[in-house]
Length: 156
Image 1: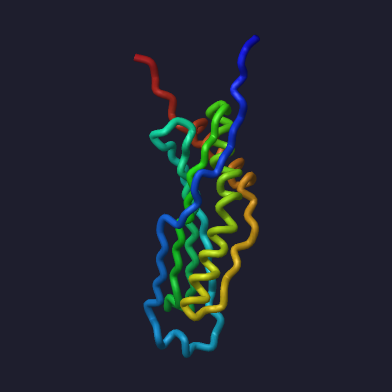
Image 2: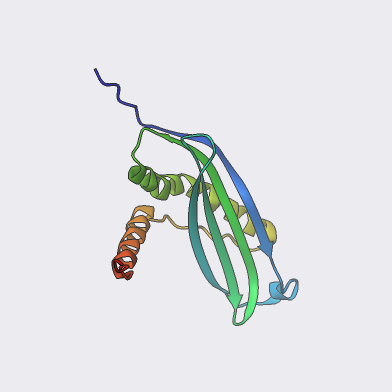
């Protein structure tokens, strides 16, 4: 009877790896009455740790608010987690790291951004739900296009 390794997924730790707030035009910016333009960007990165089956996933959320050329505020939160993933082939591990782990981190990043904005004296910006599966599939599609477009090395 062959032994099959059971698939395991676990959250070892969730933490803020980096947190930054800049209000370069304070206190004058608080006297402005216009609503700023808000831009939100999200980036995910995953790296294996030394211990087999453990991975660190970092979701970096950057929120920038501007009034014309003036920066109202800049917030950056690197929300991280250590995840245990065992019993999956590498391509499936990549999908878990690109979809399931960011879905786990998003509520924590959302709370960190909202809390920091409130402490800075601004109304909170709530991060909307994100479709990490669609983003992962798009990233795979782009990688395939890049590989197909890469020049093939000619044999000598």
